[in-house]
Image (cartoon, rainbow, N blue to C red; front, top):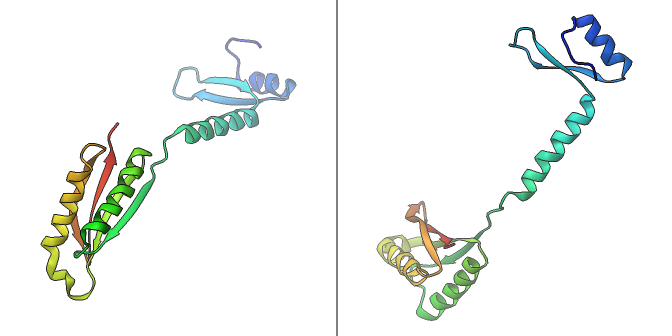
Length: 146
């Protein structure tokens, strides 16, 4: 490849003679910097790199566990074990208390269940988002400890 300062016609002629493209690298420089490359191959390599980066990025999995405000001890422990397994696998856990009909008057009961759930999972996970009420659902998110 030739290096140096060329006018636009000469640079285009060099690119055509090699069946390549003339690409402007730095238009603000004085004189502007251009490069003779195969632009399609450049785009292909760029897409390939972006695909690799996307494949290497961590995918966050969120598992949901639903309970009612009057969930009894056995069901609570059963769901607790599932949540513990999810956290050990590296997934986030969204614990949700769903209020049906008139059970909405037991908001405090729902919050106590969620806080107890978080306390039981303290050694394998940490609370990312404290209990929050949205409509008829109160939920919190627990992330795994590293």
